[in-house]
Structures are given as C-alpha cells and as structure tokens.
Length: 173
Image (cartoon, rainbow, N blue to C red):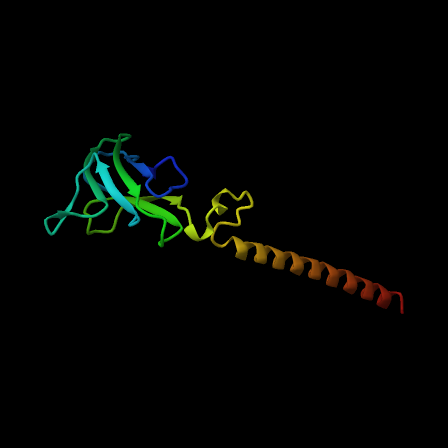
C-alpha cells in the first residue's frame, strides 16, 4: 500500500493530488476491500475519483473511499485532490493517510501516510535557509550536537589524563 503526492512542501493555496495504491501481493483474490484516504485537517477537499462517505447526510470532510476487488498481483488506485487553506497555526507538517480494510469501523489491515512540510509564517524566509535552521527542532539539534561534541572531547581528555597517571604509577613516580 502506498500514498504519494510527488511534492515535499505546500504553500497556502497550493493544490496537491494524492494517489493511493493498493496491491494484492497474496495468492488469492480479495473482494470488497475498502480503500479510504483521509486528508489532513489543514487541507480543503477539492475532488476525488472515489466516493464521499456521508455522515448525517453530508459528505464527511476530507474522506474519499473506494470498494475494490483484486486478483493476485492486481493493483487498484484512487486519486484525491486537496488544497492547503492557510499557513497560520497548525502543525509544521501536513500528513494525509490512506488505509485498507474490510470495514471503516474495524481496524485497518494496512495504512500508508504521505507528509509534506508547510511554511511557518513566524519564520518567514527561513525555508530557503540552506543551513536548515528554519525547521522546528533545528536549534535543539545544534545544541545537542555541540553538547555531544563537548562530551566526547571531555571523555578523550579524561582518558589521556588517566593514561598519563597510570604510566607515572607504573614508572614508580
């Protein structure tokens, strides 16, 4: 199972087409498998080649589904298009998940997720920063890396000092 959109970043107003693929790698045919994709909450539903499930008589937001029968080695695909509404608030990644199962209320048999970065308005311009420091967690990674380097240098210094002291002891100092 796979879900892809062929992009890595999304900006407000961008439309993205997700392609969900399910392959029967088993030795027997399967019937009436439910394949469904749920768009990230940050994405507005645009269109699908599948069905839209109804909750209380209205289409469920961001969900598309397909009922498929697959012979061994056969593949089924579905397409959903969404649009990133805004860069304000929300997570720094937009993740869309597709699953396959026998029933939407039962645990899925397989799932796949596609995640894309979205711009952070608080760090405008940092997306083009080649150092990568505009990404969340980058500052912590730099501090962690520097701390690790200091720890290694300190351990090496202690080992050299200890070795020198043991030599002095062996020489009868």
